[in-house]
Image (cartoon, rainbow, N blue to C red; front, side, top):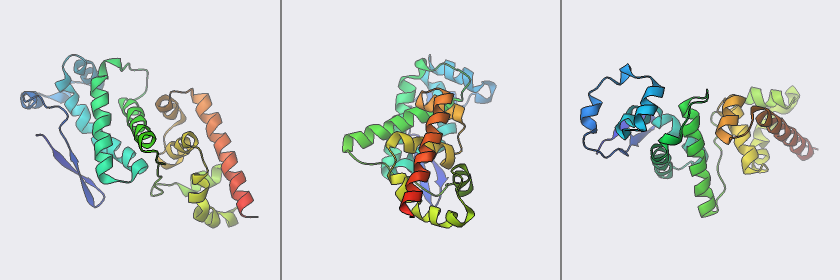
Length: 213
C-alpha cells in the first residue's frame, strides 16, 4: 500500500493510497513533468493512474482545509480520503473554466465536511490560528480601541453565524481566498459572493456593538 508521511504541525499526515492498481509503480517512473496539470486531468479521465501526481500535489492542502473545519486528525484523514475518492470517481466531469483544479477539489472536500455534519447533526468548528485580525477588523470599520475586545469576542460572534455565512467569512479572511475562487467553490456568482460577504460583515459588526453596550 502506498503511503507517504508529510509534516502537519507537530503531527504527521499519512497519505493513504486510493489508487490501488499495482501497475501504478510502472507509471510512477514516467516523467510527470512532461505533462501540464490540465493534461494530467484529461489523461486521468481515460487512465486513473495519471491522477496520482495530482493527489500527491494537493493532499496536504486539502487535508488542512478539512482539518480547519473538523479539528479531528483521524476524522480529517477519513474525510480527505473520501474527498479525493469522489474527485477521482467524477474526474470526467471537471471542465477547466479559468479556476485552479484545487478550487474544484476544495468544493468537493467542503461538501464532504458538511455531509458529515449533517449525518451526525454536529456543528462545524473554526480554527482561529490563521485569522487575519487586521483584515477583518478593518473591513467592519472598528475603532482601534475596540480591536482587543473584538478578538476576545470573535468566537461568540462567529457562533451566531449560519453555516453558509461562516463559510464565506472563513474562506475570505481565514484562508485569504479571492471572491472569484469563493464564488467557484460555492457555485455562486462573484458578485453574489461579495454581496453576501459584506452583508455578513454588517451583521457581525451589529452583534458586536450590541454585545458591548
